[in-house]
Length: 245
Ligand SMILES: Nc1ncnc2c1ncn2[C@@H]1O[C@H](COP(=O)(O)OP(=O)(O)OP(=O)(O)O)[C@@H](O)[C@H]1O
Image 1 (spheres, helix red, strand yellow):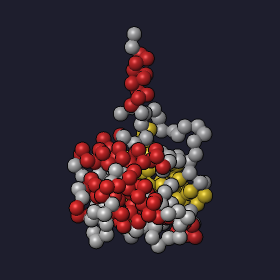
Image 2 (tube, helix red, strand yellow; image 1 turned 90 degrees about the vertical axis):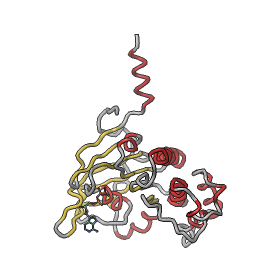
Image 3 (cartoon, helix red, strand yellow; image 1 turned 90 degrees about the horizontal axis):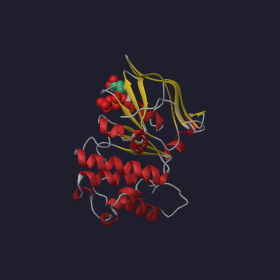
Image 4 (spheres, helix red, strand yellow; image 1 turned 135 degrees about the horizontal axis):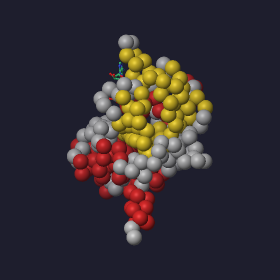
């Protein structure tokens, strides 16, 4: 794993972050005064032992949970209670266990988040487009039980992207998949991040999955204990090439 420091590049935006965020439960501190800034379009992996606070960070960033101290910041402004609904509409969430609705077709699962919303686009066309983007256009009328685990996770990813979120959060997205399928899912998440310009934050116990992101944060006991920027493999190979006689 190549590392070139922990700072973000000059001039990059830092639109999503945590400022002095703690999340306490009775008798327990899940997050302890965490500061974090995430540049737009970055793929960030959260790693660390079970109970370290990875899911807590995802829930706070997504507006599904609120801090007991500090603030979640969007474009440099604290997220307030009145902004939460609008913020949640700009967040997609992918889970370890897919959470598809078993009685609905693949297409209807993808449509489900936007059906109750007033939107300024053709919902069915958008759902068909994201299904195509995850390689499942041909299975639009299938039921989830007729698909493999990897295919079900692709449907869940399409569902998370149907409203064009600014931020895609994934909690152990490969945890229920074999390693080959898991790798394909991570490649898909990274390519969709490029295609749609989404910021991606994922929690993982898999070091290889983490290393395929741009930045890896290690959490331990509710604190960030390491913040590593991953250098693209191509850059390393170029430099190694430059060192050859
Ligand atoms: N609703 C809750 N009530 C009480 N404690 C909670 C609650 N949710 C999380 N916690 C605690 O907060 C801490 C952080 O939990 P979190 O789920 O963020 O860890 P994690 O790093 O995602 O773990 P895992 O890898 O097992 O998913 C743990 O000690 C957990 O037990």
